[in-house]
Amino acid sequence: MTAQSESVLPATLRDRWLYSPHYANVNGWRMHYIDEGKGDPVVLLHGNPTWGFLYRDMIGPLVNSGRRVIVPDMIGFGLSEKPTREQAHCLDGHIANLTALMRQLDLKRITLVCHDWGGPTGLSFAMSNPARVRALTIMSTWAWPTPPAEFHTRVFPWRMMHAPLVGPYLLGNHGALAGRGVYLSVVDRERFARAAQAAYETVLPDPATRLLTWVWPRWIPLDENARAFKRFKWLEQKLSSSKLPTLIIWGREDEVFDAATFGGRFKRLLPHAEGPHLVTGRHFLQEDSAPEIAGLITSFLDRLDVNGGQQ
Amino acid sequence: MTEVAPIKTPSLEGKRLSFALAEDRLAHYPEFRDFFVRTFDLDRKGLSEPGYVRAPSGNAYALIFIGRSGTPFPSGLEIYAVVDAFEPIDGDVLDRDLWSILRWMIGGVGVPWTVEDFDRTGRLYRVPAAPSG
Image (cartoon, rainbow over all chains, first blue to last red; front, side, top):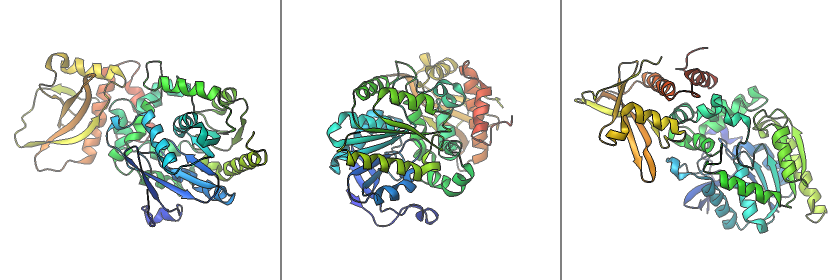
């Protein structure tokens, strides 16, 4: 593992991301992460097409609450290495990437905060490494086989945008997901365009660097022949018997992973979970409600501390 | 917008193949692979020759089909513009041609894939080549 003192971000973004970069070789890839504070670790996991920047306004409050905050950039995103072949990516491989980092840092008593593809990867890590994990926070994601939402079965726009050749053209050549895709999935779009959008686009500057933005959608199972069907079935089954303390937070305005369907299904899967707490937000709810989400997590963990880890 | 049609192998004298677009997983939706197999007679021709199409700009494009062990052929596809050897490619022309080639592909793949949904998707993401609604 290495740490670098200078930011690799352009000057215009550095004042929004003040954290020292660290790098680890995980599963054969170079993974960027930040590591701030001391205490029980809280690991913040992003999904497609974001990176640790999504959590920029949650890191400080969590560190100030006495926690160590680790934010990895998924291989293929952010400041991590970006493979240039589709076959370099698979769901199990990304779970192994996260597992490698957690083991190298020898983290224990982890609270995993899972969003989007950080859900299937982080929750699979938790279910396969229960001794390292203390608690879960689940936001705008899913953990069961086909189909995640009616939206994902439609040709327009979901299947069309990652269809063969269309995905590399639309999401690769035109960067549609990191730009307009995220923009459409926040509540305060004007603020997002002014203060955050460039941070997502800057780290995916060329078509080849955007590969994972159309590869991840292809890993969402739509039927039982899908590549990830068995993994999601396994994950759902493991979660159904999990007793890990869990907090569910959802964006009130989330139209894709809507709170009633998805938050409700997680609640049925994990009936002991707290929530769903609804906050202002669409899919990328951290962009609209970071301080409130950080407060919910801090309060949840404080209660676990008082109750000896019991929910 | 869909003035794209397969053509015979053009003269490559004084030309180069300029990389334009690549797809590693052509059969992610199998009907896309089927379209290219059907259109370019790939079950008979295999890897023996590329397919060529003419795009609205007048440029020819080579479709290089990729084989991968354990996966039905073709597993992937690379698209190259056939351009004058030393001339840089015009990015706007290339983008409009690619849009047209993909639109032609979608029309050929057929229902449930429609050029109307393709156009709507392009407009949603503000692709310059997408026709206004």
